[in-house]
Length: 184
Image (cartoon, rainbow, N blue to C red; front, side):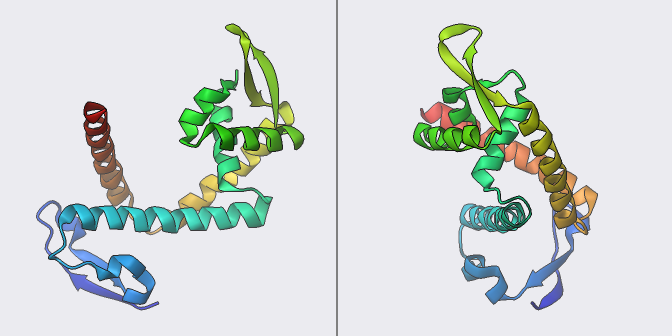
């Protein structure tokens, strides 16, 4: 991989003047962009490229280290945040996957002893799923390593830059949420 440093003026923040440019073969689709492309297209492809690169990294580690898929990890992470458990429809919404996918994951995780099904205490007609004690212990060990992989991945990307990026992505998230809600 070839890395070159190029000076670029940034009206928003002079700390971004030095930008590292990676060769086109490494960048992939994003390298086809030009200044003539609309900024919305450039931002979208840059976000997508970063997300895909991080996701690929995490998927590989989960598979190699734990034999775990990212969808299963995400499912377990949702349950870890809700110790009393979640109804499957709520879990499906939180994971942004279809009910069928949640059903398949639920069956697998039940069989592997990660989760259990219980009657919903607020609605006797419904069930909730929650982590078993063993599932919680195993997940927390995995989650610690997951966090460390992310810390290592972002190592060298200065904290002030991370903070600015986090804040700006938060603003974008609010903007997009308001736009999509008003269109619905």
